[in-house]
Length: 249
Image (cartoon, rainbow, N blue to C red; front, side, top):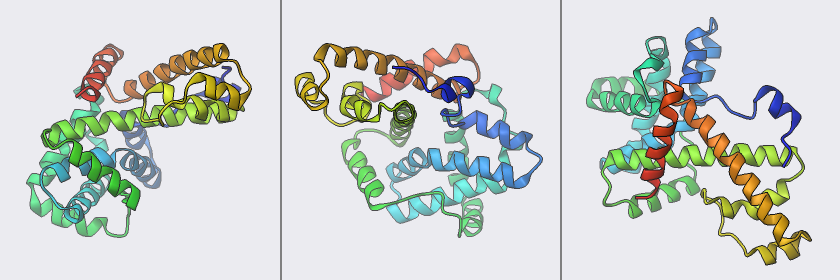
């Protein structure tokens, strides 16, 4: 599969994440630009935060308020000015900040009021149902284990979304949609190659080669997503191993 020229040239299909967004916010002279970067960050990672709070025993309403308050607090206290990528994995950094926030109820109540009117948590009926199902499946996991698994799911879904965008730009969106299930990344159940072959008028041999290329590109995208959540290149492989272990639970 050929990559779109624009993606190869500037990599803009990779949405900035975690430490990258924090560094952008910290280096920005514009408060609006900094707020925009951090708001994007919050829209990406609200699900692990929310699931952690639900697994702690908070009701959906209280967990939503806590999540909103925590994310508003991250932005309004300009935490990014003091954040240091050298401290390690963003996954751990964010969880530590959340624990500190929840432990201080006065900060929560204050930030909750400030956070009103800024909706970071898109709790649609579908999202709520997905999280309820996740909680039911993960009853043996503690809140931190639930947080880490949802973190892994977020990264996997983002990698799939980037690959989906690339394929659509390359005019191969229909092919990717048909073969998505073979990536094993929260996609639909895969149809047999023979059935897809009839639908697309493409040989099963060619489809297997397409899947191989999709998998290779997917792994590259996922690696890039993970790279933006750790301090050094040396930590990427360890974080990928951790994500695989989390998803295997």
